[in-house]
Structure formats: structure tokens, C-alpha cells
Length: 40
Image (tube, rainbow, N blue to C red; front, side, top):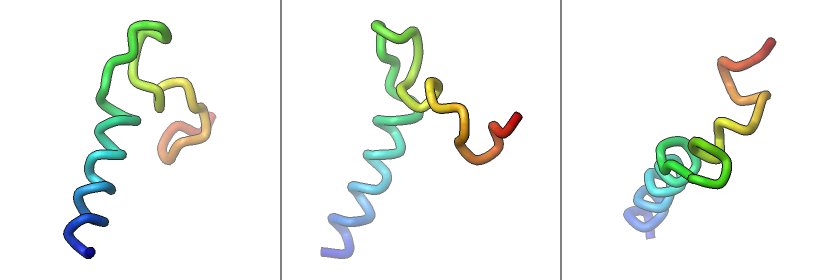
């Protein structure tokens, strides 16, 4: 169970932060303005 949780966490990060999405021109997380380190 712990291995599944760790693998999911890594996959979710990749999915949201590194996977290019052609409809929005970048990864999904690039559309969120309040992520850590992105405060303006």
C-alpha cells in the first residue's frame, strides 16, 4: 500500500506539472496562479 501511494504521488506530480497539454499550451499546473513559489 505504501508503495502504491508513493508511486501515485510521483505520477500525479508528473501529470500536473510536466505533462504537456496541447489545448492549454503547457502543463495543467501552469494555469494555476497560487502554487507554491508563484505568488504575485
